[in-house]
Image (cartoon, rainbow, N blue to C red; front, side, top):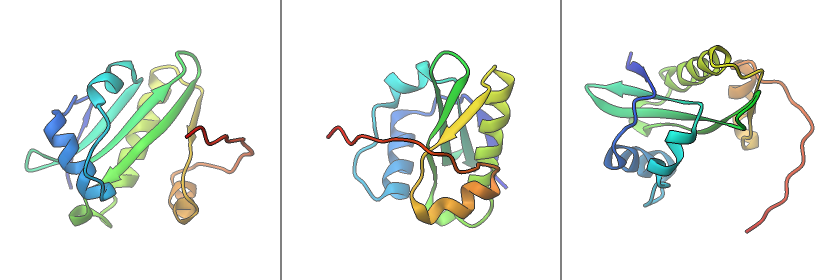
Length: 128
């Protein structure tokens, strides 16, 4: 099982490597601007390589939001994503969040339900 690190601030290269593999996209967001404003983030490391990641954004108050949950394809189906979400949930609670939100695609419903999330009505406007 990988080692889970709280607020590890991975290098841009490490995040980009994981992001490209996990999301099949060439470019990761600029996390150097994102992570310092996050409530928390959790990295999963195997042999000192970043193999999983989740960011906990927040509104500065009681609402936190899971973003960018990902695991390297070679490391999937080992419970890493579940552990990332559990750690993120624990830390958000410890740091004062009262609500933890997550948006996800329909094929991830059973995963997030198993992590304790319940459906809620929400609204969405696509801006771009």
